[in-house]
Length: 222
Length: 223
Image (cartoon, rainbow over all chains, first blue to last red; front, side, top):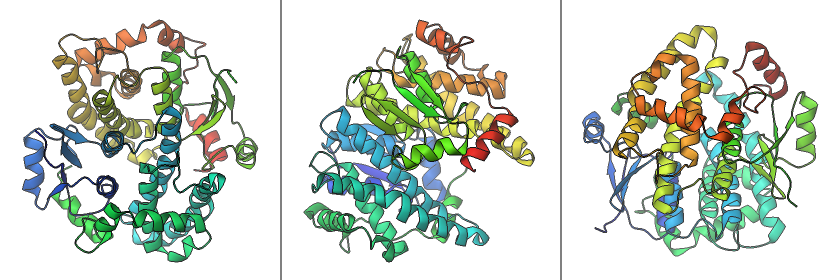
């Protein structure tokens, strides 16, 4: 029975925001059930809906999908955002795994002890400017096309755009030396589905703070 | 131009180990170029071979593959170890990601500071017995006597799970006791000719990390 996908998670970005971006960019309307009390989480567990006792979980196509990479891969495949063959999938995977590594550093910042934050921030800046953004700028430069892979929108473009917004929120000056990435960010943001997602009232979540992570942790029995 | 894949990595267990298992199980002969000093790693970086300045790197099919998940996905697809359709791929991915979560905790144990080893080991025991192994035992049970986790056919997730079973066994062999179907899977997969060869002395499986090996890696990779 077809129905909108239902995303079960906290009312947070954390590691789930990529799923929201991808569904939105694919033009898929989805519902969200936020976990707001320990009982909400316990119910999901006790009902046997969480394969590994963890969220996120997406109810979709009659199944309960878990593990964010599995969810992203499924959505990308279903909506033709995963390249046309094994070679394009390889490129998309290499790029998105690199993006995930940098994205994880931003997430880790929200759980870093105060005395280590300055060092973490310096490391993020270094990695962003010297390792990750140059790699993606180089890809765009190498073919001059509008999208990272196969001259067609894929999950790599969507996840990169999400990452660029995250970098910008962190320190806008970091994007300065990457004109092609800035152009990609603008292009993707102007796609009608993405534009709607980003507007006030859209399902994009505000930046995650350390406090929000703390609150969420209290809702989940380990 | 066809040739054997070349794996560039540290001569020990690392994120490359799952790639070694998968290539071996697929019957693909591969060469290894070991990084034994910081200069080896610098050279790879300066030659522009590492997209994100990191290993593992696998040279294969005329390309420089990086990022272990991307490499595993490519190998699995190429050698028909990734299910027959989107739904099977989804199951394989969900199981694989769960396995990797536990794998991450277990594989880091050798590098854990001595004062944290007991608590980490307790966490591994709990997760193994209560979160991860029951899921896969149940999958095998519900498949009504099929030999593999997904689609009644060997896939990457059987190979990865068996690799994990060996790792868990090294931590505490009793952890497998309550999971007879997983034990049977482990035996079955280990007896596949390609896997058997990989596991034998002289095979390309890497041994458990010793403190000495970890120290050497620390000098090269500065962690």
